[in-house]
Length: 197
Image (cartoon, rainbow, N blue to C red; front, side):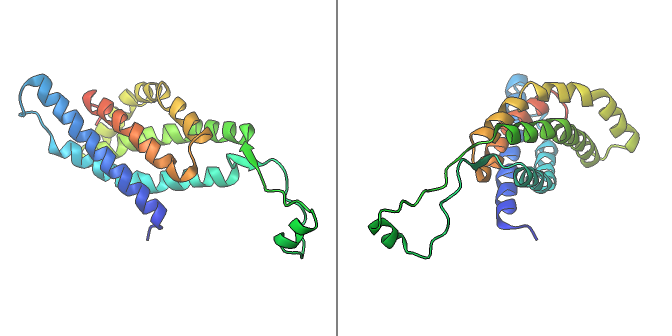
């Protein structure tokens, strides 16, 4: 059973990836001035793909955040006192709130790990799962991987690093999947229009 945050992220990603498939099909129909080449199966593949890959991706990002927190305390709170905050205020003792700041080392570590491991694995998963859902043979899927892996990964490196940096440095963890899925809407349109599905 998925926890509620993973389920919410999966729902959002599925909705947005389904929408990317619809948009790509609409663009194709507009270009061809015909609905003859509209592929409902392609839209369904994007939906199923999102359902399958969002939970492990969410858990990967959760793991990275746990190991390398984006924000770390600047100073420690004052030692715990048995006095209530009201009594401390009456005696002139100041309660120091904990402040945090962006941890550049942790952010860089997460970014590099995600780009070195996450991006290639997601590209491989995309090609493999899309081929499998199109009922292609293992030989055809392997051929697709050999042909499309590097071009797709390199194209992704032109887009995803900037989104990843913004996500890791500015966006709170609970909203990162939504930001990534929103960017994925446009990425999905690109992949569909370039027949990488």
